[in-house]
Each structure stands twice: as structure tokens, then as C-alpha cells.
Image (cartoon, rainbow over all chains, first blue to last red; front, side):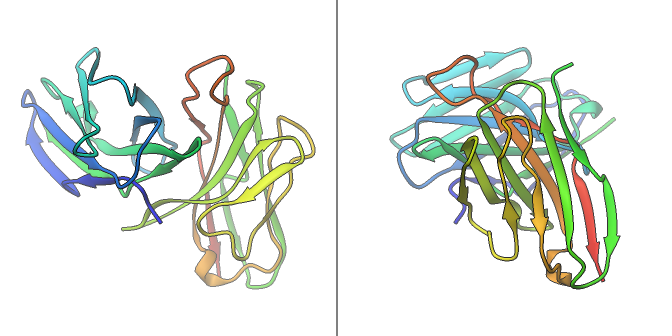
Length: 110
Length: 116
């Protein structure tokens, strides 16, 4: 069964706006990773946050992790049309094995 | 260039005809994995391997086989494909925690399989 679940399933915004997507999970994790997938292509790793970290930044990306609520959020600031993609969270819970959610489909309109 | 390669990229076949999708990585990763992606279901793990000769079932292993005879290769075998195995398949690899790297997964470009 899938461990992480992203919310919302789909998000449509204008260029320049911020995009926030969330990931909820069920059991204790070692770390949580976010990936991006352009249509029909392989996933690309964006950022990893460990269970003892609360926030992490990478360029226009900001990831938070709340282990008490078993949730994470990915914020993309000042979005661009090129950010249009599906975004997945992956949680490592079976020792190490990462498990992916169903993803959030983000559309950024120019 | 660090990469995961898959072949073929596209395949149309008929029910029951055995096929193999190859996967190779050049990053000396211990961990390799196969996923299938279907609309509305996200990525589901088929099989994974922690190292040579070590493989284990993921969430949807039925109808698939794998082998890990060499560290760089992890082929996916469909002995008797059926239409419900029509899907987009991804191979991925990473280091294991405790070793070098952040164990982020590197994904191949995908293999789109259609079984008629």
C-alpha cells in the first residue's frame, strides 16, 4: 500500500504565484523526499528532508516536515511555466525502501 | 554522465509472448528498483534489489520476474504478458543509506509497454 499521499491531486495557478502541495503519511519515517516528473518522463529528485529536520530550502523550493502530524509540504515560490509537472513525495519507512504517493499535478499558466 | 538507461523505450506485444526490459546504471548503486505507473494510481513498486543476487517483492510483483546477476543491471522479465500489464515502467537506482551519497533515486526514461 502507498505510504505517502499528496494533496491536492491537481493545482492550477498563474505564473509568479506560489504553489503549495502537501504530503501525508501513516507511519514513522527515516526521511522524506520530493520528486518532479515532467509528462511521461522519469522522476527527478528535488530535495530530501530527514526526520530530525523541520525545514529545508533549495533555490525556489521550501520543504517543511512535521513528524507530529505526519505531514510535509512543498512550496514553490514565484512559479514559472516550466514548473508545470507532477510532484511526488516518497517516504522511507520499510527500513529504507522509499514509497511514492499518487502525486500532485501542477499546471502553471504563463 | 551518470544515468539509468532502459530498453526498449516503447514496446507493443501480444499476450503470452515473453519479453525483457533491460535496465542499467553506471553509478555503482547498490539499490535498484522497478515501478509501474498507471493513471490515478501513481508509482507502484514491482521489485527491488539491495545488491547483487538480492531481490525482493514490492507492492505489485505478480506476473513479473527480476534478476540481479551484476551490480549495474536489473532486467524486468514478463514471462507471459497480459493486457493488464500495459503500463509505463520505470527503473530506478540509488546508494543505500550509510554509504556515499544522499540515496536519492535516479530514474530511467521509462518504457511504455502495450500488451494486446
